Length: 315
Picture 1 (cartoon, one colour):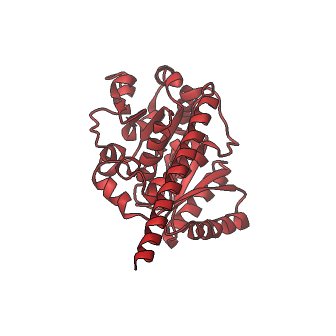
Picture 2 (cartoon, helix red, strand yellow):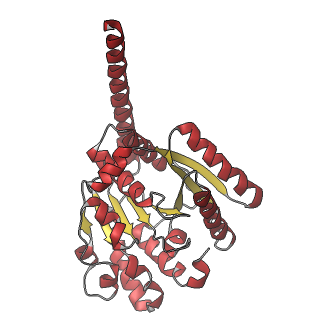
Picture 3 (cartoon, one colour):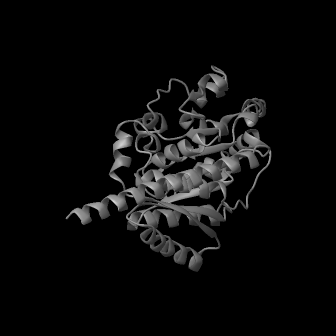
């Protein structure tokens, strides 16, 4: 009995030490990459999903928290409705949004919300749908406003809206990289495939990062990814890149209810470890569509893609 207790204690201590070592290694890697990227323009990632309640917003919030804790200056662009968006999960309250800037009621720096660490949040749902109505002078003014953020932002993460059926929105087409969140459910895989199909065949997006959420193990996540990979390789001309997985963890749900990222509320949880690895993988991911020009260049692309027929954005 005593020997069993000692063995259990040893195993517990070993797990704690391993967890701490992993966290330290990942943190060091992120800090090193931060200095490597300091002279580069911001990287822009859109996080999308082919199904509602797939965990996009939670992914954005926790990924941003890891990046910010390791020196990255992160801008979150939130296109989701207010009942379950980034502000809600961070315990912030948004009074103004991008539309106030477009209408020149507010300047851009007046509507940006300061989150924890190095995180800034921009509420953009109404503004995105107004971009295609801007004249050339209004477009130039908005691009100039966003260009002023170039020196203060390293990473842009975009949480796209899900309204009923799957939508391909201008934010996805304007981003350098699109990360699609999937799970093992048939609806999630079908929606993800449909999303990839329309973006590749109608809008020439060819490279996609794939995150597998709500799984019990890495092996399960790889099996789910392989299912999607086989179908896309058979019928589409695209490149998929497995970017990581998030293990099912009740503490992630608890953190959301506390309006805190799991990274902060439960830093040694399994979900937190997965998000740290995801942050590392994101920064080391390939980027075939690398753009130059920073945030202003992103806004210019966003304005152009907003003029595509909105009827075509529904899968």
